[in-house]
Image 1 (cartoon, one colour):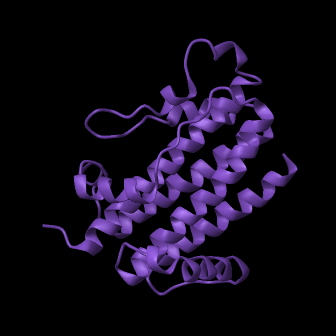
Image 2 (tube, rainbow, N blue to C red):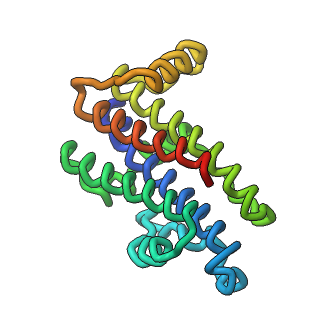
Length: 206
């Protein structure tokens, strides 16, 4: 039986996967309004992140290559963020000596991740400008999800609903200060969050 700390560590892999999947869905949604408009009728953005029944994995190599070849600055920004997430996951699995498939098949880790990061489908009726505006809001949600991961790692507990004001105060304090941690997982998450925030700020020029 896994300890709560082990479940938290595993759930973070699921959360990072979920964030990357939503980013990819949005990137294709934007691309379908521009350079990939001809593909729009054949495959919905959600199909690119369709999970396998057993492993909840989705193949991204060809999709990333395709998206990265496009000229759209918004798509390129999202792709850069996705690459950050996958590099984080590679290092995170390594330093925690985790097997990716074992973690993705773990029901307890999956259940916790769903509680923290709910899945909201992309609205297919949104136009290009509306999708960009929604993704700006999503980046704030991505960062709050990662912040919750940091809190869980540091405090070894899951529920922070009783002190939301303190939760948000500490989040905004982090945004204003160069915070780090001696905990290897928290330090890695701090770095990820800060680089994703830079991406979010850069979206003002879309």
